[in-house]
Length: 163
Image (cartoon, rainbow, N blue to C red; front, side, top):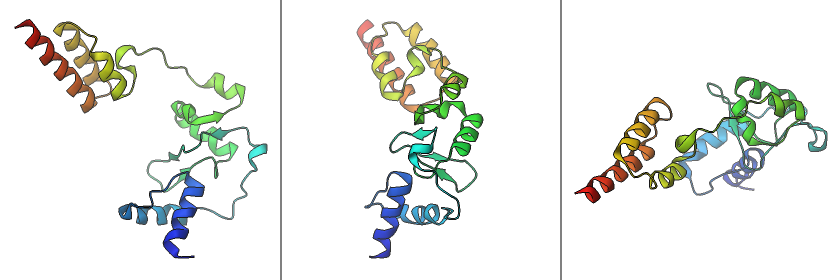
C-alpha cells in the first residue's frame, strides 16, 4: 500500500475525516498520526460511558493531541469536559450525571446562532437603532466579521428605503 494512501486512511479512521486532495494538510496528518500512542489500551465502544458524535474531533490547544470517538477514553472525556463544558455538544453519549453538570446555555437572542443564522435573523430588523445595539453586542461578544457584514448590509437597506 502506498504510504500516502496509508496516512490518509489512518487519519480518517482515527480522527474521522481526511481531505485526500489537500496536499498542504499532509504534514499535519502525518504529525497527528505519529502522535497516536499505540501503547495505551483503547476501550471497547460498548464499555465506554462517553461517545463522541461521528466526525467530531477535539484538539487540545498547545499540544499535538487530538481526540475523536476512536481514541477517547472516559477519563480523557471527563478531563476535557472539566476544562471546557461547552464541548458537551460534541458528545452523542454521556452519563446522566455529566449531562446535569454541564451548564445549559441560556438563550442569547438574535446573536446566539452561527453567522448564517444570525445573518438571516438580522433581515427581520426594521430600525437602525436596533442594528446599532446588535452591532455593539457583537463587538462585545463574538466579534464575527460575517455578522458585521450582515448588519452593515441591512443598515444600508434600511437607509436606502428611508430615502
